[in-house]
Length: 181
Image (cartoon, rainbow, N blue to C red; front, side, top):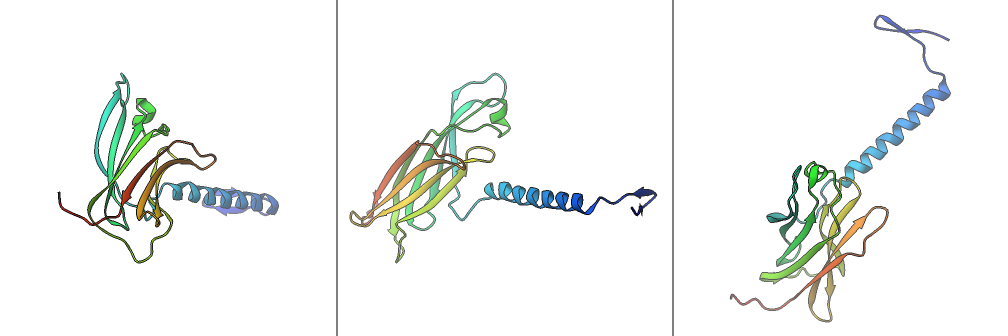
């Protein structure tokens, strides 16, 4: 075996099979890291504004358990605003962002101005998504179009990469002419 000199140290290169295995392992680790990091990146969905939080359980150490309310405007349907409330875990893990929030939420969507529908509207489209655990769980809000009733239907669900959750909430917005209150 040939010894290489790197700086002042002599190094023995690894056998080719070991080097290939390490290279393959590094490639898999890089791909996995990219997938994990990619899950936390925001998509083209709407951005929510934090309205406020209400404490539900006081914790001596760490953050309190609470319910937080966020508002977002539908990114493709002008004139519709949704408010979603979600339970947030407190304690030390919750305060550090490491706890998995429970699948407990409520959704209310309303017409807040003249509704401007695009020429074509998909029958189903994700309009909002938010991580509710560090890596593997998210809350999604999906807009469905009920053409027969001329109504926008918003469904909030909790999704896990491995398994889903039956928790859901629904809100409807009939598309009507806007009259200022």
